[in-house]
Length: 355
View 1 (cartoon, one colour):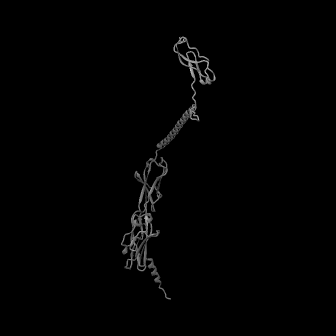
View 2 (view 1 turned 90 degrees about the vertical axis):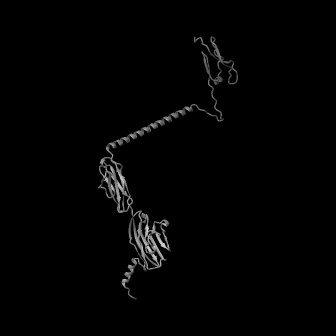
View 3 (view 1 turned 60 degrees about the horizontal axis):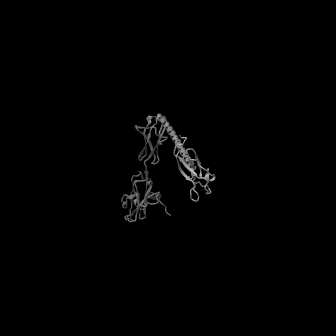
């Protein structure tokens, strides 16, 4: 057995912690970086090796939360496994001669994290970490709770930035007319008590953090009491007008319904039946009307078939000319000729009674 010098273990530990193994040393001068979203960032990785043969050189940049390297050099070629040929990750130094630094173009929130630069040469491996923080400007949204206020009412204006790197601070300014506001709180809320017409104007909220700022505006228009009352009367007038219109439309609909119902009922009083054999029902002949200056006789042929007509017509007048309009024999329902003939006539002169 032989005794070990304690300084040997201390030297070995320091050697390993420094990232130096068998002559390979990797360092960086950008161990912690902060960059605004959308900007380009440069991450440094400088390596030194005692080996002269560079054919066996391997370089990898990895993000600790990713399954694939973001960019790598191996077997004499450069690869970007994480994003493919259109990758935003690229070597920007002489990676074959000690500068394995990279750039990230158009940074995104997903780029936020810890990266490792690892260099390997003939079994010698060394690495270094770089922490990248993506900073995002706040984007506020302004709102006026409860709508436009009336005189002597309270007002609450809100300004909230859902996105943005903490810490975010808020300031309110009255743009029209221009004046600062002192009573805005850290949550971006602006309270105004018992507002007047003079409080009307355009207000701006500015949300800012260490990377930048953005703003939004609110238009405040205090409603006078007269306009408030007028607005209420206008609403009442509109409601009454709508009710009257509905009533008029209802009356019109009822009238149309009543008219067509009556018309349909009238049509039912004159049916036009069709027999099953396709022929129309027999139409009744109008009753025969026999007229002279002194005597009128109405009878239906069917009536005659049931009851014989009078045996003779009234005699024609003797003191005026007579026009015989129809002379025919009448036949009863059995086809028998009655004992007398029916004669129709009309007097074409004045009778004795007319004189």
